[in-house]
Amino acid sequence: MASSREYLDFVLEQLEGISGIDYKKMFGEYLIYINNKPAIMVCDNTPMVKKLPELLELMQGAPDVYPYEGAKVHLALDIENHALTRQVLEVIDRVTPVSKRKKKPQ
Image 1 (tube, one colour):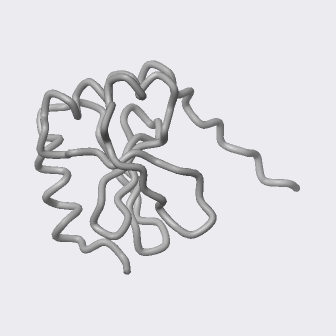
Image 2 (spheres, helix red, strand yellow; image 1 turned 180 degrees about the vertical axis):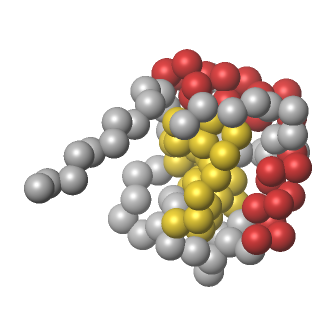
């Protein structure tokens, strides 16, 4: 089931005041970026983040979720917990490199 635009709007409202937030629709789901770095996936109306070692202590007790069949495990993010969400985004911004665009073959 794809995520609804209404739910994405709700998630984006929770992120108001955090600079560098952008999103892209991908295959009926959404990927939210911070400073051009992939940060939060919204799949089946569930916000989730990559299960990074740097997040394990901070997100202790967060349920494991899978964005799609065959995907690596992610952590469900309680988007309404603003303090936690800000801390998670700070960690992701710090440890995730900016994706380099691949040049198209000529």
